[in-house]
Amino acid sequence: DVKVTQSSRYLVKRTGEKVFLECVQDMDHENMFWYRQDPGLGLRLIYFSYDVKMKEKGDIPEGYSVSREKKERFSLILESASTNQTSMYLCASGISGDVSEAFFGQGTRLTVV
Amino acid sequence: GQNIDQPTEMTATEGAIVQINCTYQTSGFNGLFWYQQHAGEAPTFLSYNVLDGLEEKGRFSSFLSRSKGYSYLLLKELQMKDSASYLCASMDSNYQLIWGAGTKLIIKP
Image (tube, rainbow over the protein chains, first blue to last red):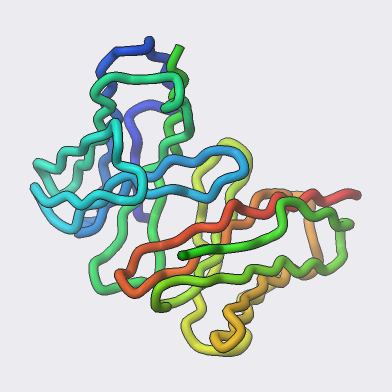
């Protein structure tokens, strides 16, 4: 079974803190993605990566950065957390060239107070 | 612009059939996905259509009409465990998924 694991299920952080969300996949997938999911909105792509050390901005990259030092790990960084970044964050991975599906982690519900 | 539309919420009865519609408008098209998401959990893959027609997979079927920019997910013999949100997503010419907001399906006994 493909496994995508996010480091935390629930997280509470203070405004202005630097926040790291970690994601690890065990299927040697080239592609990894970070989304946020808010009520009434579809999943919105923050950043994605097609290879180690490679990153591309998605639709809403402002206030976020990412790191992909190893193929299996894709980290999302909130440089200075703000209350409008309170959301569910979902990591996903998939195989380059195979568009059949993406595998999601269990999600991290982040609350910024 | 790119847009995915699906109903916000639907209600159906256990044992019945329900059809969840999705219309899409994306820059290029490389397939239409349906995912299921139970409350508080990650989305899980249900189906992928890239050619016109109906794909059947057990109690679930998915239909695509590329000329109409339209898809539906058909769920038969509904069970209480089918209560979930159903997400429609279109893959654009850059192989990026454009997501709808999801349809919350409520199953009543």
